[in-house]
Length: 112
Ligand SMILES: [Zn+2]
Ligand SMILES: [Zn+2]
Image 1 (spheres, rainbow, N blue to C red):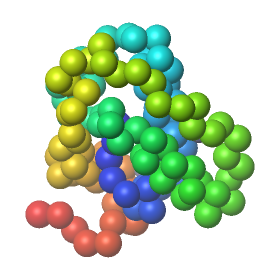
Image 2 (cartoon, rainbow, N blue to C red; image 1 turned 60 degrees about the vertical axis):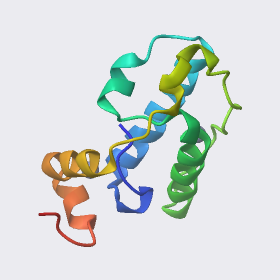
Image 3 (tube, protein in one colour; image 1 turned 30 degrees about the horizontal axis):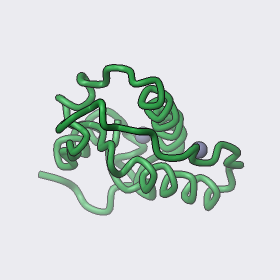
């Protein structure tokens, strides 16, 4: 889910991730179990605001209307230690590059 700098994602993945971030925030507010995402290290709870805002900024730069502001930080105490999970960026980025030709075209350099 949390893949790479928003500037390096194609439009489809940029908008898709924006939706996913809002869904994740909703899940956190409802205190849903997100262990699956955390075990795969594809989301980073503590950076959720920074991630949302970076994506929103990039959306506006590309001419999209962004009408869903960050709703505020959910209480993530229920996640326990997992709230400090950090994204495995290298593996997430590789995965995206393998999956999406347009994202690949936006990559500044090729990963081995
Ligand atoms: Zn938004
Ligand atoms: Zn893409």
